[in-house]
Length: 74
Length: 381
Image (cartoon, helix red, strand yellow):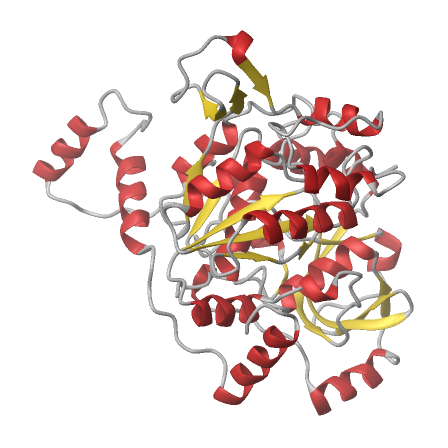
């Protein structure tokens, strides 16, 4: 397990806290904070997102030329 | 297309006039010669393979990676990318000034030195490799490293000439390639071995669920007894030509050293493939392990700590060939006893090949065996 670093506090409804507390019973999470951290990190990173185009059209064409020359593209 | 790790693909390749100026400047700056492994790290940083890193880590990131397996900004990162120097040499460089990195007598990159700091090798070994044993290749290498680490961004002047240039693609190139192929989902396969049927079965099983497979052999320093890079590459090229569809499989190399850091390295390997544009990553038994330093499935469990990794791991356990099933199988798919099973033991296959024997077709494709047998000695000495 990763070691603990610096922390900040946040406030959540106590009913939600209780629900989380119940959910981590018989899991490897040793605290509600650890579980909430996990859920927040999960929520922050969608698996697939459209990233911005980082190459100009001209640069992309050069890349395609190289890929064709190497036989990766027809 | 999947977002690069940390959100942006790093590009620190100097071009045209800026490159020429940097090359001239390199000769008047304080100089630091780097070896092959560090030169590869520099190049991988500059080409975006190690995004979001723009250089070698500073103290805050270093400690955070060691202790929390995350950069100081909370982005998952498990292997600290460091540039080490001796104390004597470190005294020649000033924080806030540039340093010219040279490789094989040529300017490689300009490093914008942000900080110099000392580190604890024992702690580094324990956290990254899970051991302080000198029998571990990574620990032994660490022991020989300088006492001071240099942190700062790098700008690449000259990319190295690779022996396998025709198989060397940058993340910018693979992302264009995957897009042109129409792949939305891509599984990455890390390897440092020649392929046997167990590998092929894993690759094809994973491929069944995604649009394409990116087979990405690791080319670089390995340990004695591993297959030579050229053998691995030629064996895979042969496998792909004969047993994969060109529309669904791509072979390209990744030039970096094996760290043998087991579970931490599995995460590191996944991050690099995410930068290449992979959405999924195959993690096998004892991924990046060496000897018996790691639990064979520790590299699976560690992914549970990274819900925000952004690339989906596909876990595979042990496969074997079952004579009664007449196919590659695993414990979940085969009801037969041990006597019917032929294990894909790398050690056994290596031994057969080194004795000039031909592994049976249920273990290795004959075309692959033929490639390996063309080499007088296919192993690293």
